[in-house]
Image 1: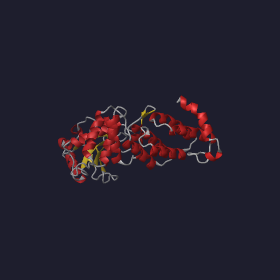
Image 2: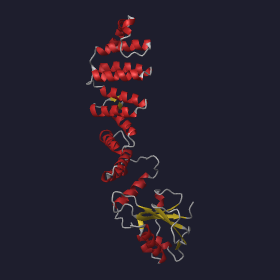
Image 3: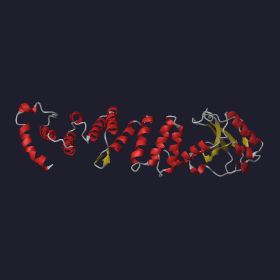
Length: 345
């Protein structure tokens, strides 16, 4: 770059020796000092076709426009350069800059076009220690947070190309959710399994995510023999088991991932699966209400019972409608999912 600096005084003289010439120079900003500097650099840019050399000059011009917040002029300049030099090996980087400018302006749809364009048409570059493809993929994931099908493509590209740079657990979990949203059940299950096998991570707002995913997979691979077509028949069967003090029958109706917990616990807290033998507490003193609780609804129901030979006498039996669209024959059936100890909070 030394010889370029030596040429600057001469170029300043040639380019700005007369006021009439100034009016026809490209990329004017109105800042006389900045315009002189940029025009001198443009003259160097036009006489050299070496991509790396041009990149050095381009960076100086870009920096000047950014410094002066001349985004419109910079966009015009970058698009001109992309048009004039489509085979420039740094074109992907210039597209990234255009995407960044539009993103800063809130024009997300336009920014996404530029990020996608550089991903599809240009090889990756490492600029200031960062891959422009990796940067663009993460931006596109952010832009398309509500479009699962697009996210699937971007997540899979991250896994195939940047597996060493990403939190694989988070990517597998997000992929599972995206496939789920699209009804691609086999792919979703496969990625839930990969999530459990990946290095431990955290998912925002889900402190017990590993237990929750394990529950889901356990249900998926279970025989599901405890499920019933209707809530009424399930509740009647449990009432009969309590009335006849038939502990083995009562146990038969429990869901595989049956919980027993206080009202304040999280459903997927690992301490909700208390190893208690229900038959041991099923004494003659146990009673149940005739009707379900008034706040029961089409998806959840509670039956108040009491008299159990346990330090907490009141138990609420909890029933829920199964959400399992993978299998239409199981989806929307009912299960006895667990027990809440004590009166409602």
